[in-house]
Length: 515
Image (cartoon, rainbow, N blue to C red; front, side):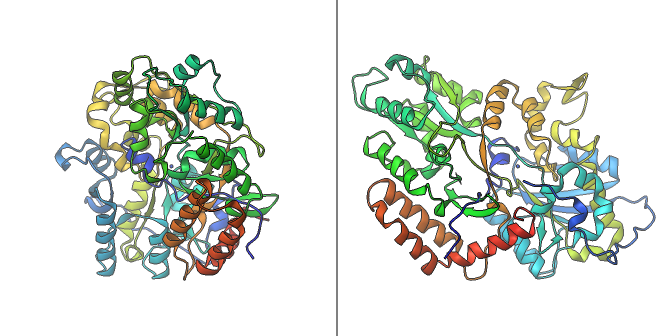
């Protein structure tokens, strides 16, 4: 049987932060803990050359200007004596296909983005450069991203990719304060108060139009209930049960002793008509549009999609008096956490082909590039642009110019090692700073899913689909909660879930999160 204790996770929102914002992400281990044995040595770089070295880079993204209009490329090339050739693919599937073709034909880019699955595949095929012997050459990078980020690019004890710096949580419940005021209710602080408010929004005509056309909670599938799971001490994020450590034991949310009670409470909400009846069929930002149109009074969503100027204008166009406010995590039988937050996920991983070790001069330039965008000159450049043109400094405060807003939409494509997330967001989204800080300060269960690789014979897509379908049945009364143990049994026997958990146990322990 799988351990009936608990841990946390998520598939990360890997590119989510960056895409939403046009480029926006335990115990610590010292970088040397993941280094190669002492007899592993890196080749000595040759003497510096005066010729420009071309560096071929590919990743996903959009909005990259032509080289003659690309001020970031020009500044980096000038600083490093390089000729950067950055190619971006708007479609993730297109990028994956292009990368696979190039790797299979030995037409390797010099630096390229990978996801965790590709990291595992290419490292096992011997196509990636083992960076553990080069950590001394990448010290600015490791200092910038931190030891925990270094673990995210680690496979079987070796560093095969550089992970970007972590992002921060964006999601909370937002609630219509004007509706609460009209109905004489306070912002909910407990699960029971949340139930009361959500029911009232569906039953008491909070918009005053005389029609029964409103409901309480909306969101994107089961993630709409993240905070409720958190109130039962359960990690759940991005429609995924989390893995987390409790009392030095790895816990899977599905086996958490409080899971049945959490599902029963959510069923109480759906039985009361307090939940958007289409919540499990949501795609994209349909839940956001329902909130904007005044159909829902509570939504679980990220702050950009409720507080950026264009969305605020849409909300006010429907109802000038609409007043959406963020909610603190509600308190429940298991505590008070807004959701899980996967510390294993990363907004990006960048690998270097093993073949590049045959060209030490170019390899050193790639290291120089990564170090530069991690340092005091290059990091501000790839975050904010050119000082005096795209931003100015008032003391240490970065003050954007109008040109940053006009030209800076693609700068994030050059943030190969990430950025100081909170500082960056407060500059780029100064008006939204209170919402950013509110979301970030919410207590979260520390999930570890992002560190876990899927074992051979385990189909993560099929298992994930089955989990989502069966949990939906429990919360909508299509399957009695008395069959929950039977659901777990099927997951173990038919979906090879035990192999997944056995592998997770080993990986999490190897990384030092379990003693």
